[in-house]
Amino acid sequence: MMLGRILELQRLSTEDGPGIRTTVFFKGCPLSCAWCHNPEAISTRLQTQWYAERCLDCGACVAACPNGCLHMNAAGLVIDRSRCKACGVCARACPGGALEALGTTISAAELVSELLKDRAYFEASGGGVTLSGGEPTMQSEFAEEVLIGLQAAGIHTALDTCGMCPPASLERLLPSTDLVLFDLKLLDPEAHRRLTGSPNARILENLARVRDFRSTSGRPVEIWIRTPLIPGATVGEDNLSAIGRYLASHLQGAIARWELCAFNNLCRDQYRRLGMEWAYAETPLMTAQELADCQAVARATGLRAEILATGAVRGTQVPEE
Amino acid sequence: VTIEAVTYATTVDSLLAVKYLVFDDKACTMAELIQALRDNWEGHEVLQARALHKAPKYGRDDDEADALARRVMELWTDETWRYRTGSTGRQFRPGMLSWNYWVSDGFILPASPDGRPQGKFLSNALCPSNGADTRGPTANANSVGKVLGGKAPDGRGDWEEYLNLLPNGGSHTMTFNPSMLRDAEHRRKFKAFLRGYTENGGSALQINLLNAEMLRDAQQHPEDYRHLLVRVTGYNAYFTTIGRELQNEIIARESHQMR
Image (cartoon, rainbow over all chains, first blue to last red; front, side, top):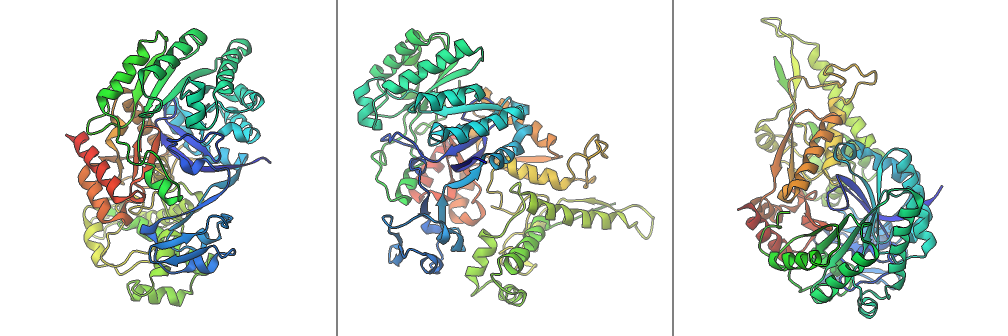
């Protein structure tokens, strides 16, 4: 029985592939993107976080902690993260749900049976399940068992990956994947290294592997490219043009869709709760015009794919597509 | 003749809370729980928090909790079918609409074991208690479908292949963010959600689209809105878990969208 570590499930997800989906957020990611929108999924370790607004100041957590790493001061609960083992004892003791254990360990079989609860919605919408994160390929044996279980039940499967993984981890998953949501953030290797912590050569090689698998395996694996639009980082004519031209020359005909996903700042408090700094805490949302401009740049690259910019924008309605 | 039941989820969640607090978790004795209710939870805030946040609830697609909900439903509908009116001999039939009584009766009914103090609204019709549906809309819908009867095991229900324990109507209300309907692709997804809703046993759904006024209310009463998911492409958050400043930003955003 294979066990995996996941952060949470998002049911009725409408943004992670076709139809209505349940998205499984895996815990752990090999990249450390400066703008990361899911900071609680970066660490492979279990973590503990505290919601000030739910705290009753009852002290149950301080008394329960077996490692003595919690104390209360005037500002609230202080977690000594150097000693916290995220054992979850405090979260279970907390009566008001103010302490939350981030991450759970679950068996593939148990996860699949939970995912099948929304089968009716998947079938009515042409949806299914998306493995995301975090990075599913970091737990590829577990992910494979989940995908195979879903496939056996006739559920459409999608793999959302940053592409930064050993080729074998990716190749293990492709036979049981119907759609790959492949992130391409920056084409310039140096900028990629500076902003995500790793160069992108392996990512581009892995993208080529997906393309080759598609043509050699006879399995019609669909590929969507996703690029986060991050002001001052991935946004800018140079980067988007470069990605589009790269895709047009290396993967023309293999890409069904290229999604440009607008920066958003909803994770700001998440960083605070985790005791992490975030360089983008004060960055405003993009405007509808900026989003439209990005879309126009992407469409001018000659890539034959459905190209659209999506996401929240400052002060106006999300553009109609 | 329809008999309408009210306070359904409040009843179910109260039974679940008694089971959890007194028997499973042993957080208190039955006598202590009764005392806490007599005191309207005052001075028993920690126990109340356990009832609210730790006890299982109807509306999360939790098979164990929903099985108890189904038992409560059958207990009441079976009992209703046993009677006819005294004067004309007409059959009593069960329904579950709560009109506005779920609001006003909340002031009459004393504190309940689910953590609700006197004066706070009861649950509405078939709906899970306010804020209890923390697993999202499909989980909420699945729980409701299960207690309505779902598909008959032999495929021969009393409404095509479905059982319908509430032939005289049961109302269920859900709230969505307007971004669920923002373009043709999302409208198709929403239609599919409604098809899945009926497939899983739901019979009547009233739909609210969330607006800025409601978000402001959520700032004032976060305990009623713990389920409220603010969804923006690629990321989502429970509205009540994000800071005030950011909430204001989202309200501003929603106000604009609603124009």
